[in-house]
Each structure stands twice: as structure tokens, then as C-alpha cells.
Length: 296
Image (cartoon, rainbow, N blue to C red; front, side, top):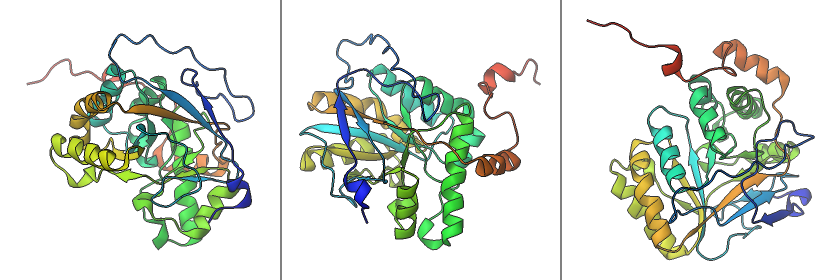
């Protein structure tokens, strides 16, 4: 399932601070100055990895075996299905308190509903890819329907983050990878993320269950790309303790960045704007726009 270009894709490692969002695909913006960490015992970011996604390389040993770039006790924190009120901000706070970074895979519709939250994710220096328009199982769709799901998701995330290109990373819903869509993403030069260990947090109601799930699997595997969901309440509640246990367990966070961001296709931008309406790119937090000044 790997193309020749994907097998040749380069991964460069850097100990520099988190890269800033690119202003356009041709001329990425210079790296932003990392905010000062106020927590002397923070988990932090051990290193930043830049991925050249030419040809659509895949990552995560559940499906892709070509690139084993993590060292022992290194983790990549990934969160799917956001942004979502309450839950995503709680995850962001936990990450900020530990001065660490994650890779987010938002659903396009959710990005359209809550662009102000997704802007906070970007502003905090996290990496934001895409996770389809409406989280449909692409293996059950026609090639055109699946393409539309992918492209509308990319367009919606781009619009919600201020009409900017997004990180060149994609995760398939339910981790189901139709071969024709793997090829399509390769042609688009979008890297595919599976996982090394799935928390299965969507099956859990209590935060401590999420913490135990992740830590037990890491104890067994020693490292890995961790799949979680900022959409889930249990995960939002688990984030502070999970990050603390990662620190206490000697684990180190690796942040993922892309060499060349992904530009949305204009026809899909138009499609999303028609469906969701305008103003998404300039949306402010709802609390700064609408306030209840009197109630009975």
C-alpha cells in the first residue's frame, strides 16, 4: 500500500521549538518563539519531528510498518473527533499546564460548528490535520463519496482556522483504509496516521479507565502513537492525570509537524461555505459575541 514516493519520504528530527503554522504551502512561516513554560516539572516536548509527506507515507504500526521513528519511552499524543465544547478546552488546558503538544484530527462538521475552539488549538501551537467531513466509514462509500468526505474535511478545517492551509496529516475514521483512498491521499501528498496503541476511550465512562488503558498499553509496548478523542468527556477528565503519569513514568512527548501544508481545493471550500454558511473563518468565542444580560 506504499507508493515508491512514500517509501522515500524523509523524516527529519529537530530539537527546536514548535513550528508555527504556515501562511501558505509554498512559503512556510518561520518558527514561532515557544512560550515560556511556567511549570518547572512539566512533561514538555522532548523533540519535534518534521515529516515530508510526499507520496502519502503512513505511520502507526497497527497498519503501517515502514517508519519506526520513535525511540524507547517516546509518545505521540493524538486526539480525534473534536473540536467539542468543554471537552477540547479541558484537553487544551491539561496540555498547556504540562507545556506539551499534540496532534489533532478534527471532524470537518465539528470544525464548522466550533471554529473558535479549533482556533484555540492552533493558537496553542498544536498540529491540526483532518479526519473527514462527517466521520463516515470510507470503506462503505463509493470512491467519489469518499473523496468528497476527505476534501470537505480538509476544507472545513482550513476555513475554521482562518482560511489557512492545514497540516498534511489525515486519519481514517475507524482506521479503515480503502486502498483507492490511500492512493488518493498519496497523490495529494497527505500523510496517513493510524496508531500504535488505541486507548478505546470512546468505550469508557470514567477518566481513570482511560488513564489505566493508555498506561498499561505503553508499559507493554514501551512507546507509541497514542489514539485518543478530545470529543470524549472521559478523556477530557483523564488528561491531567494521564500527562502526570506519563511524566512520572519517564515518557517523553514527540510533536509532529509537516514539511509542506495541505491547501484545500477551491470547489470544496465553496461547497463547505454553501452548506455551513459564512463567517466561520472570523468567528470569535461565543461568550465574547453573545451574553445573557437579563433572564427570569
